Length: 281
Image (cartoon, rainbow, N blue to C red; front, top):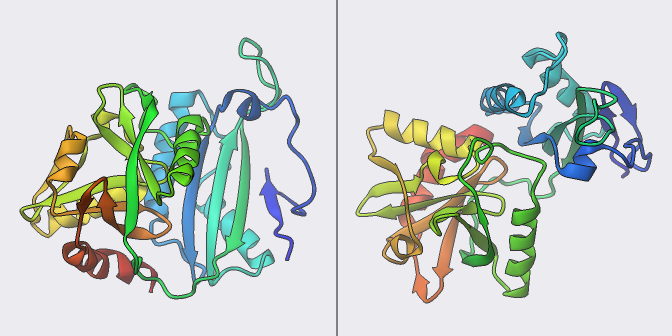
């Protein structure tokens, strides 16, 4: 089935091309995106996504039109999912970008939005049965700056790391920051557990400000679980009891191996059942 998409409120067929070749997002990677799990016409983490998007737009000099509200965008997503017949379970991507023009030119339009959604084949929401094999990507480093935490369209470092991971036959690759400390993974935030304390890189370490990361930290702290956001090297992972990755689509995925180190997943599984599974069942 050909999936339609929504560009600035107009529905296009999936095979219709409507983005200009001089688009600034295509040229420079300028813009933002959100990836959202839709379940039974609901997006349980919608407020987290909306707040991140709303807070990030001014950082990239976007000025959203007055009608572009929380409820407006949410309804646009649901309407497209209905048209694509995937309201029960879907992956949604919202991309924000400007129009055409060079870096020193005023773009032809200051604000555009693109909504896409696809059906997810796997109906049962569960943690991965087989643990992930992961490794380090060492050909590039992420800077720790004002833009590091954004879900940016400029994704080259992560794309290269993903290709490297495929060459190495890994399931994921870890990105290091400019200080050669753990930042995040290509499509996920990184957590590890040591002596029942949950650790994850601090936002100052350059990781994407992940929606599932934020939700899980919030839930753990409310439950009285000790969470440490800090500066972590690869050595910290090698001494961890468990390692897991998070994002808004799959919640938690446990890591089986990192280099010569192997891990279990009993604590990660409990976190999944307690905090993630109830969101999307």
